[in-house]
Amino acid sequence: MKHFLNLKDINSKDLRKILVDAKKRKKLRKNLNTLDIDKGAPLKGKLLIQMFEKSSLRTRLSFYLAIKQLGGGALTLRSNELHVGSGEETLEDTAKILSTYGDGFMLRTDSELKIQQFKKYLSIPIVNGLSPDSHATQVLSDIFTVEEIKNKSISKLNISWVGDSNNVLNSLIAASVKFNFKLKIGCPKNYRPKKFILDWVKKNKREIFIYDNAKEAVLNSDVIFTDKVISLNDKVNKKKKLAQFTNFKITEKLLSYAKKSCIFLHCLPRGNEVEEKVFFSKQSKVWQQALNRIHVQKSILLYCFDKLR
Image 1 (cartoon, rainbow, N blue to C red):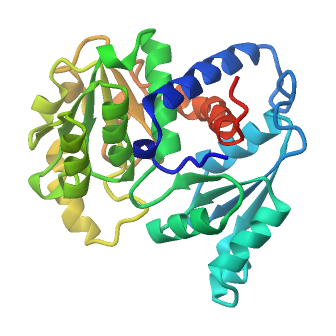
Image 2 (image 1 turned 180 degrees about the vertical axis):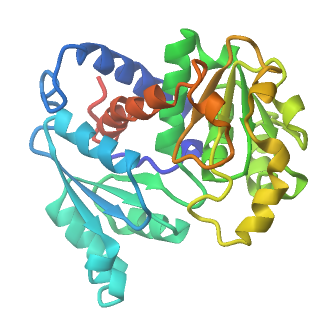
């Protein structure tokens, strides 16, 4: 049994195996309908229980379709509908019930502690669908999309992030270490990545490049990532924060400093951190990025169930 919580905790070889498997699975589904089962139905009879404490569209849909296409089923719960959500049942007892009824558990939460507590008490695999410090499933899928479009290893590309330092960036930083690619970050000085993230990078003898100028961050870039400035976990003065990111908006002018072949990716939902002209341009690959989550999610589940071929 394996868990999928944070890219930092998974070795590079296993992450690459997940991507290779996802590529094969996507190719094999070319002529299949949405609910057709993959050949061999590798997770036939398995039940994935999903619990959402945070809003979700792509994570909810992609995991539901991932387990269905692998031959299993999904049950979606909301924490405020459970005893644990109202404090009437301990998390330990809830975890034991989930382990009794289900075969895997996917949690989207606002608490890192809760993720670790469930990991401690569950006897089934747990997947982190999003937490304050990590969005590992999103970023691994993004790596898949980059390599699919560029048709080369991400280790040979220049990757840029422009915007807030949030859970998605944390996972992208972890990915830069695991997949050995150059990562440049453009953000205001007060919104740099947290010290424990930077210390981990240094501990692994890698380097990321941080600029308080968006132009410098995207020079010669092959891929530009961004995300909403006001994220799901933010409890800040929104007006003040948005004002501090005025010079970090993804515009056509900013994109012109990157390579002509540069692509734009956004994990969605979007806000005003990107111009409409960029978001709907030929360089924008956001819809392909969103759809690919199904394929990578499937391989993540197979990894957790020790079924990767």
